[in-house]
Amino acid sequence: MSKFKVVVTDYEYDSFVPENEVLNKLGIELTFAQCKTEDEVIEACKDADALINQYAPIGRKVIEQLDNCKVISRYGVGFNTIDIEAATEKGIAVGNVTDYCLDEVSDHAMALLLSSVRKVTLMNNAVKSGTWDFKVSVPIFRLRGRTLGLVGFGNIPQSVTKKAQAFGLNVIAYDPFVPKEVAENLNVKLVSLDELCEKSDYISVHLPLNKHTEKIISHDQFNKMKKEAFIINTARGPVIDEQALIEALQEGKITGAGLDVLEVEPIDPNNPLLKMDNVILNPHSAFYSVEAELELKRKTAENVADVLSGYYPTYLVNKDVKEKLILQNKAL
Image (cartoon, rainbow, N blue to C red; front, side, top):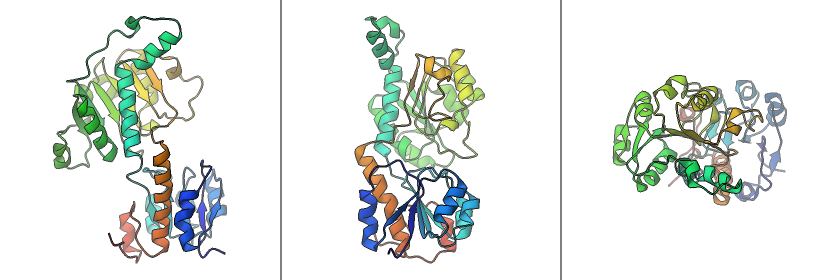
C-alpha cells in the first residue's frame, strides 16, 4: 500500500509513464478519478495527500475539505482551476509548470500570424474549392517593418519576440508587471494597452485568465485598432470579448483573426466565426507536441514528489504559503 495517496482529479491522457517513473521512487501508486464538479473532487480527494489536476474545479469549498493535502500540482502554466488564496490559507502548496510548451505556443502564435497575414489558409481553401487565383487574397502587405503588439510579456511572448524579430517585425508590448529593463533587453518597448491597439499592425494575446484579464480586449480596444490589423489568441478564450470580436470582424474594424482558444470550447456550431473566411480556428492545440506533453507530465509529478519529500517544489505558485509550511529548498 502506498505511503501517500495521490489522486489525479481528471485527465485526458492515455498513459502515465512519466508520472509513475517519478512517483514510484517514493512507493506511490496513483489513484485516478474523472471529476467534473467540486462535490466529485471532494468525494475522491478528501483524504488525499496530494492532487494532480487538469480541469476539475478546486475552489474554496473543495480545499476546506482537504485535511491531509499538502500539494496540488496542475498540468499546465495556468492555475485558474484552483483557488490560490484558499490553498495558501490551508497551507497547501500549489505547483504548475511555468516553462511548459514555450516553444510550442510561441511557434503556434507565429504560425497563426503568418497564415493570417499571408492568407495561406484562405488561398488553400480557394484552391481546394476549384479557384486557382492569388487575387482571392488581395491585399497582402509586407511583413517586414510592421509592428507586432504583445498583450502580456511573460515567458511565451518573450519567445515570440525573438521569432517575430527574425521576420523583421518591430515588437511592442503591454504588461504592467514586467520591468522595463526586461523588455529593453529584448529591444521591446512597453506601452499602454490603448497605445498598443493604436500602433500595432498585428496583436498577439498572451495573458492568463483571471478577474483582471477577462474580456480585457473588448469594444473599446477594437475601436482603436487599425482596419488592417489581425489579432491572434493562443492564451485563453475569455481574455477577448468574443461578441465584440465578432462585431469588429463583421463591421470591418479589423481584418482578421487567428484563434486557438475561444470563450466556449468546443465551439458552438452556430458561432459566426465558423463562417468567416478571414478567421483561422484551431481546437486549443498550441500547447501540444510529443515532447512538451512528456515534459509536462514529468514536471507536474515532480512538484508532488518534492513536497512529499519535504522540499518546496521547483514551480511554486503561492509563495506566501512558505509562512505556513516548513519545507526545505532544493539544492540546485
